[in-house]
Length: 68
Image (cartoon, rainbow, N blue to C red; front, top):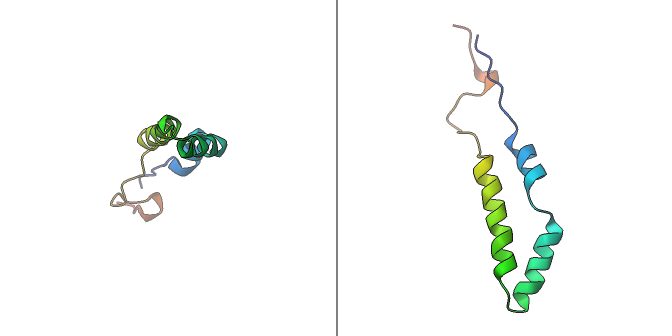
């Protein structure tokens, strides 16, 4: 039997995402005509998603492993 341990990407992402207060601030600045803070916030979110990608859904989960 092969045991495969997977990191929980959701927990890692949640810990690494920028705070929502930064999003609120960026939205206020965007409304005033400055979209640079919103772009920076979205870039930071995309970087977190790239750092902790979702696992491949086609890969077998550890509970689906069988003894061979």
